[in-house]
Amino acid sequence: MGKFILAIDQGTTGTTVCLVNKKGQIVDKHNQEFPQIFPKPGWVEHNLDDIWNSVVEGIDSLMNKTNTSSKDIICIGITNQRETVGIWEKGSSKPLHNAIVWQCRRTTDVCTKLKKQGHGRTVKNKTGLVLDPYFSGTKLGWLFKQDKTWKQKARDGKVAAGTIDTFLVWKLTGGKSHVTDVSNASRTMLMNIKKGTWDPELLKLLKVPKECLPEIKASNAQFGVTRSVPGLEDGIPITGILGDQQAALFGQTCFKAGDAKCTFGTGSFILMNTGDQPLKSKAGVLTTIAWKLENQKKMSYALEGGAFVCGAAVQWLRDGLEFITKSSEVETLARSCEDTQGVEFVPALAGLGAPHWAPEARGMICGLTRGTTRAHIARATLEAMALQNVEILQAMEKDLGKKMKQLRVDGGATANDLLMQLQSDYLGQKTYRPETIETTVAGAAYMAGLGAGVWESLEEIKHVSKVEKEFSPQSTPKQRKDRLNRWKLAVRRTTL
Image 1: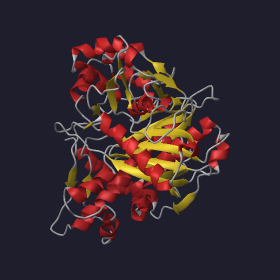
Image 2 (image 1 turned 60 degrees about the vertical axis):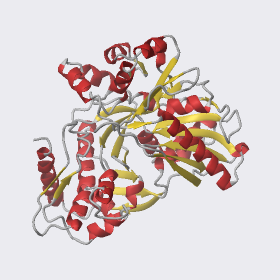
Image 3 (image 1 turned 90 degrees about the vertical axis):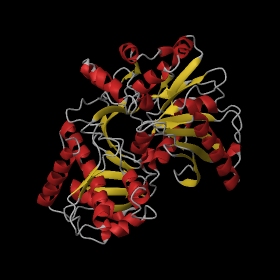
Image 4 (image 1 turned 45 degrees about the horizontal axis):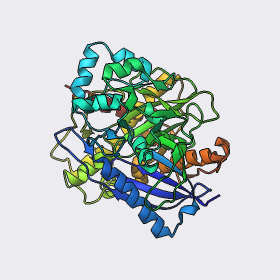
């Protein structure tokens, strides 16, 4: 057996390719950014060829930098931005349109119309999701409206569609495998999460031909082998796929019901494992599939809530307001004041996600006085990032019927100790930061390694993940309650 798992983390702004050893450690990595496309306000696209080229360039750079041979690669694991979707010709693998990105709001009117027609309950019951432009189904419906010939070609087996994992496997296997895993399929609004299959009623409702969709497989299945990939020999097995947030849950070894993680990225994404039964949320969060293992009879489920803007709020302070020159400076600026002096910043810069689901909401800064400084706004930004997560986690606790015991965190912003302390204070729970904060990569590697026999069990994987730092609450219950009440009042104002 070789030395490394090749883990591909295909994200919103770039692709990170990593070599992970049998101890679960990231040996080296390479990040390759690609252009963002904004055709209209609220619209976001990616060129599928740009995404594929970022993967190829990442693999080439990493293999050359580490002097690694293809023979050293045991298997490949993939994690990816989830709801982003594209369509391409099967014969040529040529994209027919830019991919529509998860952040894109172009189908807001479609979702509003479907809600008014009373389809929200059907969608929620079958998929665990809400009717929102965030998910892939209405994006695909929109794509098929752009050219009347595409839908017929799809029915004739000439056009393929899928989320980014599907496109990458298609390219990695030279067009031999048109597949996805249950975690990605559960985010399309087209799959029945109780059955694990594409749902005929939803396909008809959203006007998506079933013939264009990939085969749904377990997350550690045999998805195919490499074929004609630059820098890699043929025959390397692809044995693990997880959507990025499920990958982070798996990478944080949240294998039991009640285990939860929060990923601080462009947005914040919180998942709580609920075991082998889907919980129907009454509190505004989503029900989704966490993963399915080949040796499991049942799928593993999770509750999920996300804030569309998290780390992106700090980027806005840097690029939009020019308060800081690099994102890491926000902690020092925020620490220069003890509190926000009443300033509230609700970063609804792309609408509000869970548990509010208000795409029409807009960002707001309020409570300003003549004494307000950049530091107060910076601190209000960090507090907002933590407070919106508390709302989501409390909604999950309500659905689960019990309090969580801890929160595991990951993502780039977790390097900010002040933010992590605020998260612990406002949640009232211990917060654990792992040694490896690239837990999406870890999850993809663990899943692929499980599929390839590098690790034999979840217990074996659990010993691999280690905690780097623990944050304990330093605020009183009354302080937490008062602070959350002020936050909720500010949030309500964003939709007035």
